[in-house]
Amino acid sequence: MTGGAARDREIVLETERLLLRQWQVGEATILRELWAERDPRVPPHRRIDADGRPTVEDLQESIRSRDAMSFGLLAVARKDAGDLIGYCGLVDNGRAGTGEPALAFELLRRVWSQGYATEAAMAVCDAARSAGHERLWATVWEWNTASRRVLAKIGFTETERREVDAVHGTTLFATRLL
Ligand SMILES: CC(C)(COP(=O)(O)OP(=O)(O)OC[C@H]1O[C@@H](n2cnc3c(N)ncnc32)[C@H](O)[C@@H]1OP(=O)(O)O)[C@@H](O)C(=O)NCCC(=O)NCCS
Image (cartoon, rainbow, N blue to C red):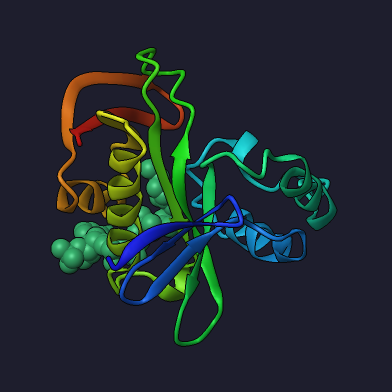
């Protein structure tokens, strides 16, 4: 991690191999690819439906309408190749009910297992601390071994709290003091 910067009031985080920054509308195809690649165990409202929605246009609109100044989910770009590989950032954590944000990340399958999620998530945790947050949460499916491993590597601890869903699996709640 080489530091974070507010460039033109936009959040830009830089690590050894990655740049994390706001999404551009023209990059919605990458978001669509992430949606299309999702594990079949992910609930239907977070997967492409039978009508092909969300479409690239739907996702363009969601990028357009997002508050450009919010921390949100940042696009993750590789510095050497210059390509986008997914997102990482903070989201509202209504499920934990503590008012503290949650960490979220998702990367394209073709770049998995190269340490990118860990590198990006560490940068987001550092930036969250700098922004004054004292604790972060993350929710993760019990079956999601890779995500649980990333969370453990960056210092999250799984709590006793869990939500059992007979269809999609159990959601675990993990947390980290910053
Ligand atoms: C979770 C995710 C972001 C991880 O991205 P990544 O760049 O591959 O993560 P990293 O390479 O930093 O670390 C992955 C770790 O999980 C381990 N791992 C991956 N798949 C695994 C598996 N099936 N079983 C056990 N460990 C596994 C890797 O070995 C690595 O651990 P290590 O460094 O100790 O060897 C990626 O798998 C993804 O996008 N998944 C779908 C979306 C998702 O689940 N998001 C999180 C929702 S909570």
